[in-house]
Image (cartoon, rainbow, N blue to C red):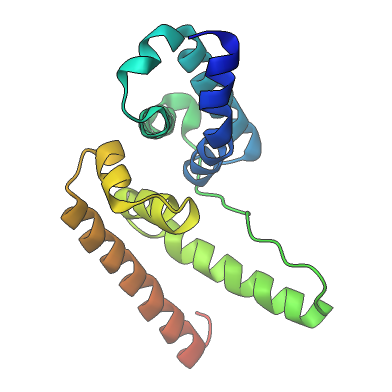
Length: 169
């Protein structure tokens, strides 16, 4: 695989790699480092990439594993979930503040989910991967992905309803 083939193969999903890394790691800088590291590893092994049915799925699996390794490392003791892809233009300040509060609440609820559910929410609802693709990335059955996603969504919904009904605790 030459440089131009590599770029055509990898560049379309590099932003997804970044967003998954950002979901799992603390900051933009950590996610950028993870993305750079992954792209370097892919480049280094570009001759082997033709062996994979889906280079994108392989890269997402590598990203997940790299981020989990970073989270387990000593230097990552203070990493936490961060996500800020949501942007809205042309609305009033009050509506913008309310939306930001709602997004912050959802982020906090996602942060409280188990690691596997966080990742499945990211891959399915944010990155819009199909269940079969997620199953390959996480080495799970599609049925288990659906169940985990359903439980995560149910938990978030219940917590949101509770907060809207009783006020933010």
